[in-house]
Image 1 (cartoon, rainbow, N blue to C red):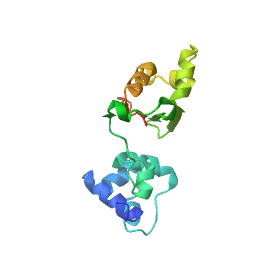
Image 2 (cartoon, one colour):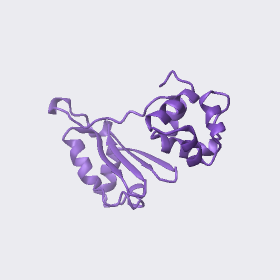
Image 3 (cartoon, rainbow, N blue to C red):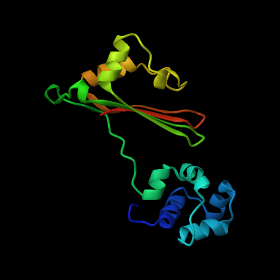
Image 4 (cartoon, rainbow, N blue to C red):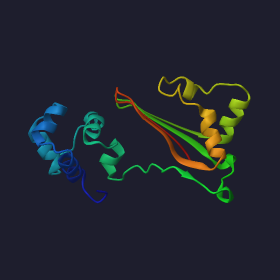
Length: 167
């Protein structure tokens, strides 16, 4: 869908979800004519509608606008000879709230090790209810054993999403 216009992406994604234009319009509190104009590239959705539109269509706002799907690394256990040095690895945490807020945390694993060894807490992790049950030291152990990729994926009943991956 990368080569599609925004309108063609909206139309294709709407059809994938088996939604009619008037159903999508009702969900977004706009007129069916507005949806038709978007899909025919006669106008664009208001910026305030984009998070809700993307959520309904099952994509991120970035993917909706660019057509490029976010690549989530798969989990891989590298053979010992291919293990990366922990100082070269990054822990990435992405939290997407049901309200449309997104928080991205990118931390060098060596920094996390130092913080944990000093007995300190990581406010980015400990301050989030969804992340409190995640044992970061266990994730570091996996990384030390050569496990990389998307290690944790949580979708809450409230619509919040958390992804933790190591690269």
